[in-house]
Length: 82
Image (cartoon, rainbow, N blue to C red; front, side, top):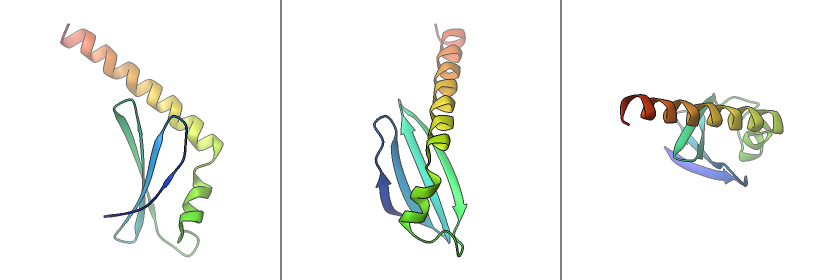
C-alpha cells in the first residue's frame, strides 16, 4: 500500500492510499479511524477524482459517525472497566 496524498481538514486527518487497483480513504480523529475503499476505474484514477468524493455531505456523515464511535467507546469503558 502506498500513500497517494492527504486531504486537508481542520478536524479529521484524511490519508489517501492506493493498493491492488483500489483507493483507500483513511480518516482519523480522536484516536478513532474510518476506512473507505473504492475500486479504481475509468472515473476514479487521480487524486483529484478522490477529492471529489470527500464533499461536505460525506464529511458531515463521517463526523457524526466519529461522534457515535466516541460515545460507544466511552460507554463500554464505563460499563466494563470503571
